[in-house]
Length: 283
Ligand SMILES: C[S@@+](CC[C@H](N)C(=O)[O-])C[C@H]1O[C@@H](n2cnc3c(N)ncnc32)[C@H](O)[C@@H]1O
Image 1 (cartoon, rainbow, N blue to C red):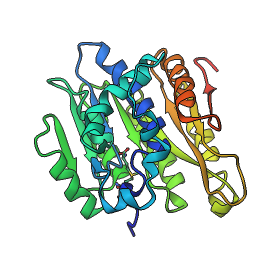
Image 2 (cartoon, helix red, strand yellow):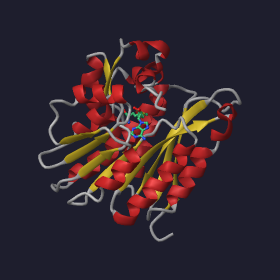
Image 3 (cartoon, rainbow, N blue to C red):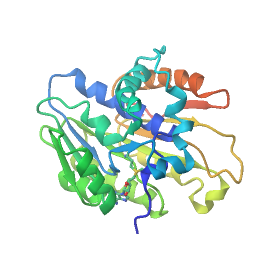
Image 4 (spheres, protein in one colour):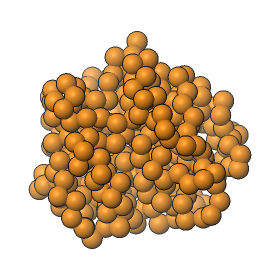
């Protein structure tokens, strides 16, 4: 059953940290003049209008992108890069999803595979991406598609895994898919977004933390970066979120650390951020 619609959450604090981290990876891949391939296993609708009914319902973008909406230069190169990507969309009263963000980094010869299972979200994605070059749209399960389409040729590239985690099993599905992927594509950089959940989430509380510990065994190096927007209380559900990055590019940790510091200054006093290595080279 697919009930999740990203329109209710687009542009919120979770999208902000996820998209900053992903742009950090894209910037690294663009440094070399060699083609790369990107995989987005859970693409969503591609772009979200602030005046859509879903966006208007909870106005979650007010916890994220709206707080950064002055788009003035910050002390962080990576946060500035994120703002450069998002600003043209924000001026048109919309927020770009990961497919549009990835597409903005493609050069001639680069490839983007977008997977989305929800029929209505897939139809929107097709409309949003209809003029995009180098993009392949797949109405299929993202985990199954990832294993079928990897390793890419040439084998430089990265994967964004951003499931809704509506089902408890999704945490295990992420670990299983990444484990299998690394059996045939060790070079892949993988970014996995996860929610930080309080006791209200029942058995899902602690599932993200268990998942990223298991994921850290699968690659040579890994770290997690988190953005916490509320004190943890039994009844507040998602109090923040994070990204687990496997095989992170050189200096992404420093760039992301700087971006998170600048981000917390912009988002407000109650925000805290962290970046922790799970596994370093040779450990
Ligand atoms: C969190 S949203 C994606 C947001 C998007 N990555 C972004 O950052 O803009 C998750 C999406 O995954 C889709 N989805 C859920 N299960 C899926 C599966 N097994 N394979 C592919 N897509 C799936 C949902 O329909 C939803 O659109």
